[in-house]
Length: 176
Image 1 (cartoon, helix red, strand yellow):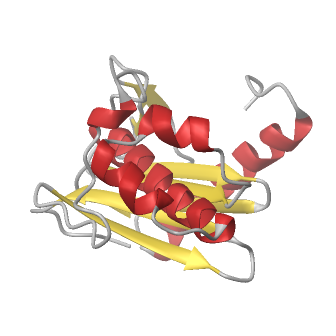
Image 2: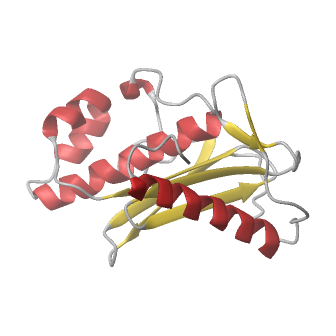
């Protein structure tokens, strides 16, 4: 938590931790406060809950937690102004055509944010982080975005103007 530079990030991190504790309690798994370990790529795991996998995400005033019995990833992002240079930098040709296909910059911003959260949830599920060419992170064929190796779901919250995407491999059973 203290690695965050600004107090707002520290607060979001603390809220994510509390949400994780709440989820463990709600699902009937809680027997002690979570203790973190880290894999070789820095992805956290619960060292005192070896059969439970989790992932956390937060931005602004939104916090998300995903629990499962297998590796998972979650990302939440607020929709921001569309940036064509950024889209060109992270999108495959097909993804860029899908995003830029609308003349409405608000639609392009939503498409881009959805795609970004999908990509980030996938790399968080894999535990690799964003350490590769983002154009090569395939989350499905736009616009339906069906990916056969992973189950990636996205949800747009109109009230908060944010997307949340979750990722898990196709053979997993979700806890919640």
